[in-house]
Each structure stands twice: as C-alpha cells, then as structure tokens.
Length: 139
Image (cartoon, rainbow, N blue to C red):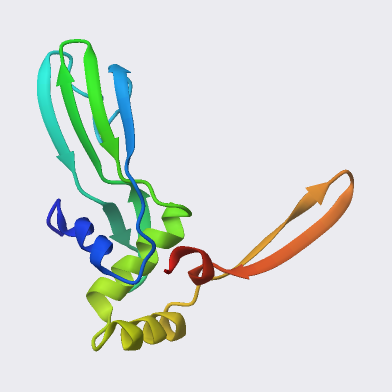
C-alpha cells in the first residue's frame, strides 16, 4: 500500500474525520523509531497486516505526518472513531470488493461482518451488549 492510499477513505462511504493536530515538544513517535531530534519529515502510511488469510486484516497504527525541527514537532494523526474496526473494514472495502459503493458495502457487511460483543463487570454486576460497528463508521 502506498503511504497516501489511505486518503481515498475521504471519497468512500466511510465517515470522514478530521486529523488530530499536535504542536509542541517532540512527543509523537512514528512506527519503529522515535521521531528525529533535529530536522525531519515522516509520512507514515496506514499500518496493517494480514493474519490467517489475505482478507483477515489487522490494524497496527494510524497514518501520521510528522515534521520535526530541533526539539519541536508538528504532527497530523489520521485517527478515526473506532480506528481498529474503521481501518480494517476500509481495507476490506478497498481491496476485496467490486461494484458500486452500495454493492461494495453490502459485500463488506456480508463477508467482513463487524458484530461486536462487549462484556465485563461493573459494581459486581456482569454486563454484555452488542452492536454492529458499521453503524458507527459508515456515513
């Protein structure tokens, strides 16, 4: 994947989002190393891998654009809501579906379902709720 391919998400059925802006002392690391100490640009693309099959996408990191000038940094972090589900579904949509946007989304929901179950304990009481992540990440 090209470092800038993830920008195609803005012309897709997925909810658009604004990148987060950081300005301050060098603090935002990029994958594999801490940002440069003097001057440097880093354009880091969407980090992902496939696990058990060619369509089993696993999110690793959000895209980041970072500029470091001595001890100061300006960084744009492309982090959508529910970033794990968002990027994994978008990767499936982008690489593994064909047709119109509507047909591709139908195929995503069928072949790459995101039916999530959250469970835990609060105040000694066990709880569980379910939701479909597509309801939160699609326009």
